[in-house]
Length: 83
Image (cartoon, rainbow, N blue to C red; front, side):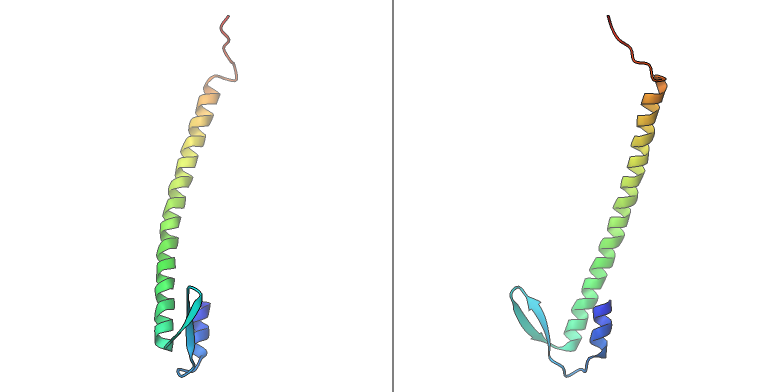
């Protein structure tokens, strides 16, 4: 978003380049802004997806922790040995 703000301050006739692999390609300001906006949208969607995954994993962690505590607290700390 910061890059998009900076590009807005630049004159429309200023040459702009986008890196493609090892080279730079001359583009119009409108094309550069469009590509940046698309990247922002993709990143925002990715963030939402990752947050969903994070909440799912946190829930799984809490469940595993409670199961772990339950299994080890049932025995009361005693271990059975067979002779």
